[in-house]
Length: 396
Ligand SMILES: Cc1cc2nc3c(=O)[nH]c(=O)nc-3n(C[C@H](O)[C@H](O)[C@H](O)COP(=O)(O)OP(=O)(O)OC[C@H]3O[C@@H](n4cnc5c(N)ncnc54)[C@H](O)[C@@H]3O)c2cc1C
Image (cartoon, rainbow, N blue to C red; front, side, top):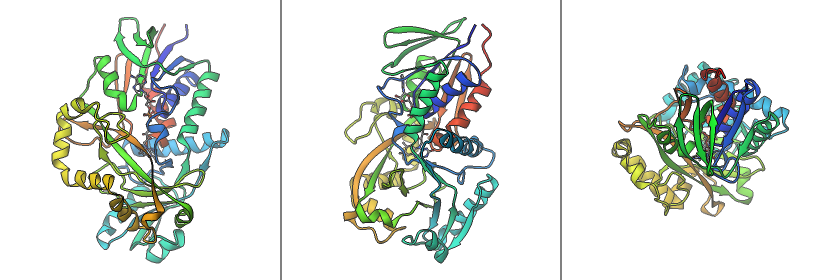
């Protein structure tokens, strides 16, 4: 009999996993999502950058699955006429003090096999981005942009074509592992699977608790806010302009990104949110769970200065503009207007440490994706292969 696999979450990771299990494995796959459309959360609210693999420690899951994911995604976009543009990325050092970090980044990128990496001086970087300033830069010419929500919609079609189903408006309310399978209660119906893969992003902790696997990390939501450049100011940015990231954080710092369709966004910052889907300041629905996790307060104590700076940036356009002008000084306040933001699902340990790498747990019949922050959209097709390799086929 055909193996039955349930997947919680119709973001890009859940849909890629479902497609892999339905295609390569021939399983009968059902994807469940609480929203009325696919890609409703992180997948539909991000920078749209296909990261080349510059930042991640060599040998980490992020480094490996990002490189594999780029190749798979580029090919997938070509086969399905999905947008994929190699606009290139500049990581810019704006002070001499940042030079050693920039040099280390270039070495890391080469160690990860990122093609075409070039180290540029102040003049060289202006040949790539004529309106950018800095003392030096690393150029990654093959870093690309795409529309991850469009990729997710195509993956959902693939799942259906492979005989699976994507059931929207199906919030998972209960999970019970039995001797013979996994029972899931969703939209008032009891469904039984041989295995369940949980790719619930911001909803991970809730589903993990239902499955009796709370684990030793928790999702802490970080809102990422953006401004969009208007009119002629868009012409000041050809591709992607990034700062040298602070190695203490997994976030990359406010950057300027050209998007499919020509829009240029400035952002995202990283502000601790008090609701898992806390897209606005006023939403504090989950403050008890978020502040109740000891790791949240330990993290806040350790990083309070950065936290305050991010809050200031969130409240005052001036602070945001200042961050962008550091790289493109011609920008003025009139060039920036608020754009829609996103919320990152970032796993935080009990000790307050932000989990840097992707993290997956396999327990009995349930696979939990515990941490799939950026570059998980880039890496989604490779994450799917990795998960399929970890899940033993059920004998029915
Ligand atoms: C601001 C921002 C910028 C980013 N920029 C980039 C970038 O440029 N490049 C990149 O590669 N990555 C980027 N990322 C990261 C990337 O978007 C995520 O890593 C990726 O989308 C994760 O996909 P996912 O499927 O795991 O999560 P999601 O897309 O969040 O999907 C999870 C799904 O689970 C569903 N769900 C949750 N709970 C339940 C439940 N109980 N029952 C049913 N369904 C449930 C949700 O409705 C949701 O649809 C960015 C993220 C953010 C927020």
